[in-house]
Length: 286
Picture 1 (cartoon, rainbow, N blue to C red):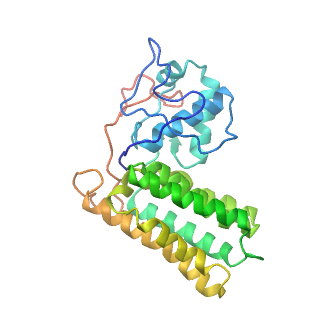
Picture 2 (cartoon, one colour; picture 1 turned 30 degrees about the vertical axis):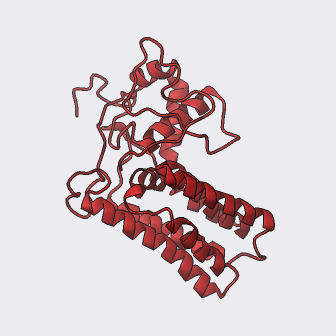
């Protein structure tokens, strides 16, 4: 999952800002636009947002161990809010933790990514059949604005912003379905898919695709339930197939293709960031 150019202008603390003496820095740190205007402005919330941005851009590579001593120094924070931020990232599918390996940035095999796309398609396809009324004019206006912004971001190569705006576009359908449990399940895949799409989509997704592919889904809403569900699911499966073909060809990272069905995606330069739940704080166990 390999990095592309980030967007600019986040609120609050962000990587690359105020990196005073003694604070470790990481390659590729970037300032990203905040996807949530009501984002948590507590210290834990700011650390969470900064770490999330660094993971999504590939500044912290998949598989990187998160070491609390270095991260606490980087953010000028005690370990308690840092631990909470890492737990939040784990709940979003961006970090995986276990006793022996500690906390690491999550890695997803091509098979796992395909499963996540298929899951999103299944959930959204079903939710789209539950709309009790046409989308409101306000929702349609927001969706068109998202598409225009996606096309503009694609033009500049800012594929992480495209991924976030795409999530916002599809969320309008989920919200209109009025099914909070389905929405929660749908959102569980957002982190891993944004991380992957945002870093490799430039190799397979064209600017002209954006309006056409999304308008196909929009046109299907309100039609026969089976057709609506099938078109929505196909939208996700086609994206997954394009993405995985790109990864298999090594196009996104410019390297060799992954070996085997469960090979991890290509990675940028990897570092280790110490975490207190690492049973080997000296770093001697790999």
